[in-house]
Image 1 (cartoon, helix red, strand yellow):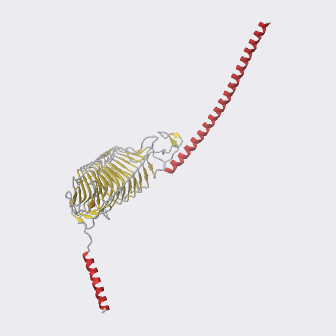
Image 2: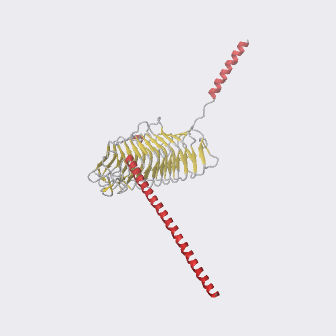
Image 3: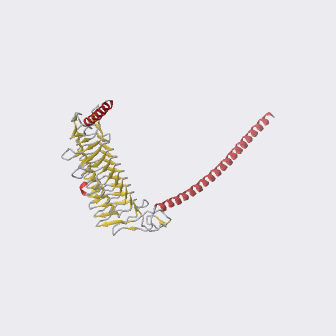
Length: 440
């Protein structure tokens, strides 16, 4: 009997555990579009976002749908939760949508989307950082944009990680798109596997710096844009590193553009009066390509081991050096000598600039090609040693002059002292003799 009861108790226990396990279901993530309204309210109230002050809004769980922000001066902290962009905002399945808002921060949010990760329209002074944006493999369409700035100014987009597909194709388009937007900062982002990593279109006075762009079909594209700064970016392992088209007065400086299977940098038709300086352009199929581009300045760059250093197609005059003694570019295949110096390279003595012109075409040449870095280093050491010897010689001469001056000064002191003593003694004796004569 005891065994039967024990058996029944065990059966009931397992049955109870089964019912308990069946009745306790995991909480479902929020589905549908979430709104943060102008008054600070969250709609729907069941959304996995909490706030205690209507200023900082923090995700407390994953969500399916989109997030539409209508309130200014707030912080949205994703807390590394995931927003699965399956709802429609602004007509597209968008992750986060900002329209006509200012001073909104979106940070640490993971977004899986099929069309747009973060869309910012007619907004200013916003900050997007620390977000991770990836494509949703279950979606029926490939992603089009990671982050979009449209008609927006003075926004900061930094330290985001955007990976859109395993194989970049024209369908999955852009990592970060800046369209008709001015004075924005795009920096320190990691962008991989897109058709074009960063695009500036019809925009001005933007700063694109310190981004890592890897494995994209195109790296950074500038079209119809002016007065932008593209600096200190690493662009590698794509088709084209940086391309400029129908644009002017942009500055490309300090970029590391390597191992692209077409061109490191391309200047397409209408690229005028842009400045390319201090870029490292190496191991590309072509270092730089110019097609119907003119009046651009290209100097102080390093062109290293590109299969073809320069490809010039139907282009007019471009400046390939910054005059003497600033110099031009370093070309790894330049075999000239450096025995002379001066603007015409006809004065004896090395100056770190090749004696012969580096010819690039009928209208283009680097008149002052720079020596390899190791030769520049040796030349600097040589010049330093010469200056050191000159300094030592001048210092020795200075010390000799000081010694002579001190000796002359000491002689003058002795002469003055002797003369003064002699004069005083003579006057004293004369006075004494006069008094003696009077007393007699």
